[in-house]
Length: 453
Ligand SMILES: [Fe+2]
Image (cartoon, rainbow, N blue to C red; front, side):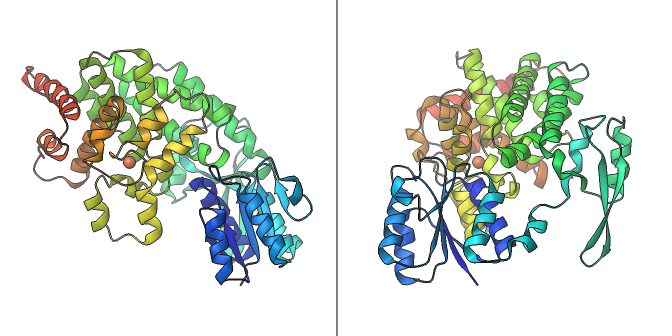
């Protein structure tokens, strides 16, 4: 079995490349953080077949160091460099793929280097139809292309049957019927992937920006749009469509908080909506953070926006592992019995999520740092109650908001006697500034409780 060392700091891209390299080359993919770590491994494992790395990792000139090492060792190990700026002395010895997100190109080049029959695998790399999660179709009422269902005909043969025609109108009921039949995905012709993403995004933006209906319907639309947005961001990164969709969702989140004078009923509507955990946690954290900002005399539109961006993205690196987002302390993590990969994923998720938002050049400044700090650690790694004393004030407000939302969601999931969430928060964080935030939250909840029913 061939062995590939992969150096990639973007967790989403790393996952995408690893999955596809393993699937299409059958190789073992060994992740490493830097050229230094890769060389240490190659010193003891000289038969590595291929190294895939970015031009730079942080301040380290990764490609240059590895290229020089491989040339010096005169071995046959291949080198693929992702990103612009390939050092001139590597132009003959390395394959450069300027767009590192182009995983198909990375797989193709890897196949060539590993001497695997490319034609045979090309068919697998480019299937004729692409799966689309069925909930995407809840948000649209017509499609820009034909839509198919996939039926299994044999151990490795499928038949695609057209169910929706391009331009046809359909209702939620039609989609519900497919869900009842057990379908989780519908399929579109592969050539329409980009068009379809743009089409769905445009329709959602249109609905979000011109929404007319009840608050519950608004929340459901925001939740559904959120699920589409995070999947598209994972797949396509930030482009015109995903940036616009994100903005409309965030505007919607801020608007619901603005239009609802009392925090608690709105939180209840979100928690009881038909939507996923990450969305509920994000929207609720945004609502609580906005309430705290108001009560702390920080009622400025730019701060509400910053909090909403942080709320939208704070656990995005866990979008395919949302159970891990329910862990809110080091003790929980230790008790979780996760395998090493998922343990690391949970441990580093605040940092990884902040790195994803950093790629969004139009996001408010400072939102990525707030995400990095949302479990109390300055560097975004792990969970810290004492470290939370050192994070900036806005990060403390967001941390309390996240903790409060997570506790409400945990209570909803597990039930049992009501938990003294506020008292527990005071105990968990021994910091004066954090105590002030918890205190205003407590006052808001008490005020609500005193109101006649
Ligand atoms: Fe988190």
